[in-house]
Image (cartoon, rainbow, N blue to C red):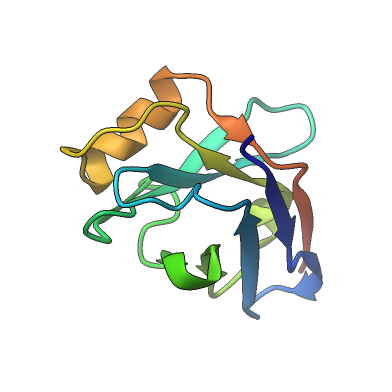
Amino acid sequence: QVRLVESGGGSVQAGFSLQLSCEASAYVLSSDRCMGWFRQAPGREREEVAAIFIGDGSTHYSDSVKGRFTISADSAKRMVYLQIDSLKPEDTAMYYCAAAPNLSFRDSGPSCYTRLSDETPIWGQGTQVTVSS
């Protein structure tokens, strides 16, 4: 059973950085898995912000966060990270780690990004990020 546990959220001032962590249960971060991060602000739909293909480490980002967010993974530690730099008040949201339910050997960061939006990912419980101006 896939289990994802996020941590690292908090309340910070604009301009600061945070690193979110997602611990996955055993065997989740196999080389044929897509992982990603989504966020949901109050009153808004859940939005995908980043994806990574574990197999080759390739990544993809939404235009709204490109250049400030960095997704990475450490399969040996069963961890996926989201580094958020230059935080803005509009980054305030609940952040969710996501795992694609289906595996594929031929994915990439961009295709993982699409699949995570098209399929129904496996979610963690979320970690809150609040950014004050």
